[in-house]
Image 1 (cartoon, rainbow, N blue to C red):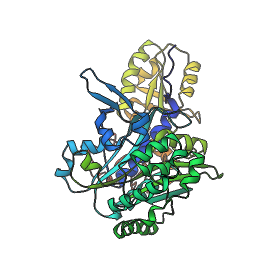
Image 2: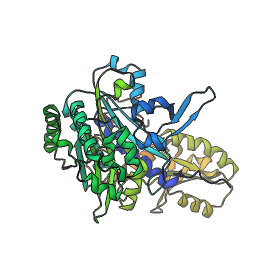
Image 3: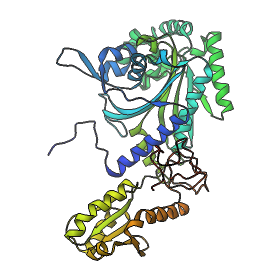
Image 4: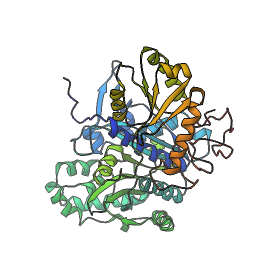
Length: 482
């Protein structure tokens, strides 16, 4: 019996379905804003994170999984994906090949050696976006609004945006000097982490959670008193655009974030349930001035955010936010063959059904009819297809609705047309996006919607909006099954 490695967890069955649901919604939201997918390696050279994340961060100082490979190179399991995504942009010369900004989203596993707790593991999945080539502060506001709207799409209603600015280089230089003068009087009484941060990056002291240290931090100078006119103007532009977008925010002068590459605006998305439970931050990000150049690219700025999938799933489960989500995984057709000949022929029938876009399973064991119906029920099958010698000889199968128990006889060469008709009727009655029926204007990502549907994955007809050819050349993946 092998046990899980401490800090890891299996994600299986319905839990895996929940993770996939979260990822699909977040990815779809990013694509609505014109972002493209990036998939970077899980391992990177350790120097990448030392230069980007910074040696004053807890990630680098305490949490990285680092080892020497057989060639003597220092390799690190990625603790976050921003640095790898920017490295990929630089390595693939994307900044020379297209207009700014370069916009990418990512989703995948990360690794940090930290104390496991609910919703936080040593191997976890992170979703995030990077917008590199930011020239105007309006772009920062757009990135923030995208993160906010993504969480709204997942069902998080009582969101609070906490926001701050770390200003420009001049701002931070003056502010660091002021903090040095202030904390020098108290640093001997503060925690060991604060003592280390005092040497490496004094801004990080503001993020300390030790209760006794918080009392000292509360009296520290505020960065708002050291902002240059440009830094004030940039931050004001962001706030005004958030006002226009109807996004409420709270300015938190002690918000600095835990990564050294942040400069300019930083933000966190906090959530409080309908019952009043405060879950704290469920996503965060910020602006960076030097990260792209530090990794070998041009001197351009960027902005991004990240969210932990485990954290989101834990909060959504706790607050019952999956109740209206489309996470049920039904089996469209369960084939019940009667006899050896039927079992053999069922493989071809199942192949036809699957290649027509319907999920299908077969009972390939010699079972009685009652046992096969129980197996179909356990698989949440919507329809049972009964195939025996008589059905094969007559080329007519029995198709039974597992819920209503109604059954019909269908010709073999009309089977797919009949399934199309039955599932189209089901979609009319109950839209598969999990929300109220949209009368032809559904924006979900599922199949079998009728004409007028504005999504990109549906059964196409003359009103197909996928921008591909509406015949056998359509490549959207959810096409007419003729």
